[in-house]
Image 1 (cartoon, rainbow, N blue to C red):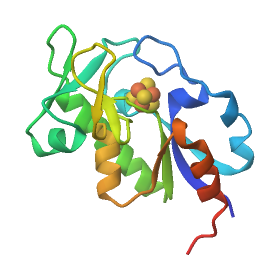
Image 2 (spheres, helix red, strand yellow):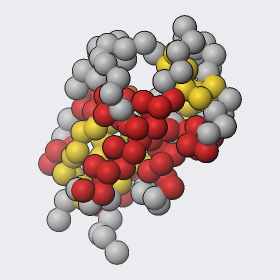
Image 3 (spheres, rainbow, N blue to C red):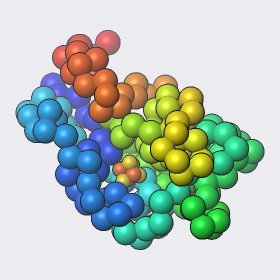
Length: 162
Ligand code: SF4
């Protein structure tokens, strides 16, 4: 049976990115044959519009945001933490409703990034850490992958459920 996988919607070519674009990956084009995909954009689920102003986490990563010690800010200083946390909670709810077994998430995003995120300076630099949604999904023990880990991800897809 195919595994059920939550996927950052922008990786599948849906125009959910902050600038109205997407991050479609050609190497994922045959993924629907290998897994049951559930596209999801946490920032849209949190009520933010598309296009929207870019935002980054200041003062920590997604775990710190969930703990209330860091904030998600747009470049012009608007605090959008609440929308990012709501989007993370809605994504978790969706994952539970559909019994998702893992997630393939967009690298470095303040929502979806896993292990590395933009550092809050809007300079393209990164820091270690998870985005807000990735942090919440990781707390549930869900296996997380980014588009930079497609080989490991594809191996995981082929592993039998234990
Ligand atoms: S929140 Fe995630 S799915 Fe939505 S555009 Fe950003 S990286 Fe893609």
